[in-house]
Image (tube, rainbow, N blue to C red; front, top):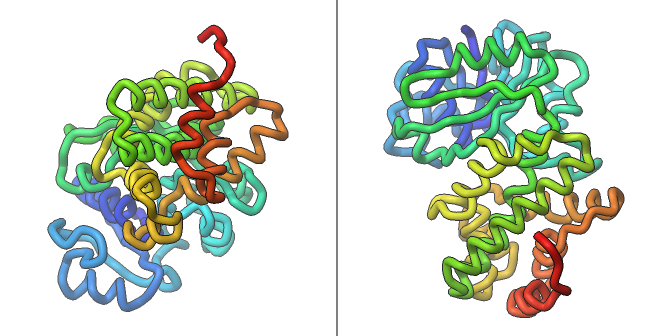
Length: 318
């Protein structure tokens, strides 16, 4: 297949390697021409993975990318840029979204912003640095067009990257967005040194919180026990490479959200998603105490106060 990957960040770069190794003709579309030129000249991505050989992958600025003639456009940009990016795409080829967030302007799932062509989403426990090194991983692809999901599954699946198909696109997307918020809280637990028991309890209750929200939005409960739910939540909350976990840890140690974002140096989706998710949960009248607490901390409430508030809530059944 001729595939254009839009977004040369860590996940876009790693996914380009997956596609190249499956024998596809891959173009990595960068936000600025200087970035593309650096990749072309060095055969590496100096901003993210200077150790990963990108030989066989073309690189160009987004404006010059061969999207109109592509068989598939893979969109790997931050949630805040997703709407404008897909609106500017030429041609009619299907889209595969790698983004994990919600549209901050409307609160809508990102796939709903694609109205002129088929769209599918891919999610799961996919730490980009591990995928770029060829370590084994798995993911789930979901979309309303089942035939497109199967086509993508067959095009991507390899001995080191196993892809499952799921028809619950709502659940997959909402899991991908909500798990980043829980990871901020998990990182906060790390930063305060609260221990593994507290962190495990937080993640388990976070999964329950994600499930309540997504079921109220029309998702399937079983999605949360799968790769997009439990799988992605676990790796995001425990991996040392997890940006959201690291941001929560830095904030717990005294950094402001802006300082944490600057130190990490790349987009931290949970910081964008948290207030959007909180507002949506209130419209749906869904109780999400961890998400509410994360937003309070981002607004300046000390994290130790959040911990006390969560532990002091009225006893209830699980």
